Length: 219
Image (tube, rainbow, N blue to C red):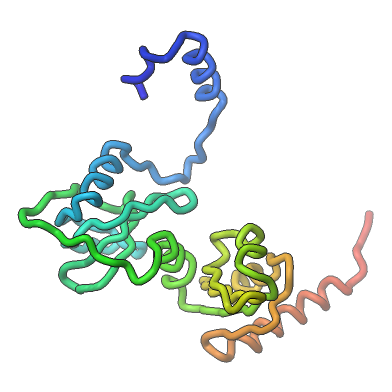
């Protein structure tokens, strides 16, 4: 952006400066090096073979050997969708957790993904990492629901012309219940894993109903 700045007319440059001055970034957002993103995008076009250290969510360092395939922006973060050469499987890697990237000799392969890259990343982020899993069957077509279901809530899949499946994951029973209650329409069916989770969610919901039935205390 600094290189482009002298090429922009003075009036537009002033407007851009005003926007920048009025823009704030939340402190908990992970910083991502724009130069690294540029290099990764180029590596993806070439299906380059890369090695780097990767820090997991549990703060464990591992050495990765991958073929870069797709760079995906999801929510507030960037993800590298890659083919793991050691595990021989797809992996979704947060760019801000990657260490120094080293280019390896040899040509990589452009591999066909089992699903669209954005769907694979969404599933890996919103469902796969969580112990608790739930699948909701909702009334409505994919076109009707995809604009009303937040991406962080889960992965939406069509099931015929008039229904969809919403696959979601959560870290706790309370969070799972909150996600379900956040939907603007109730599910027609609910499948959970483990099976006992369904009964626990019902108990939590009943407890919430009892709490709301208590008359409010006013000063």
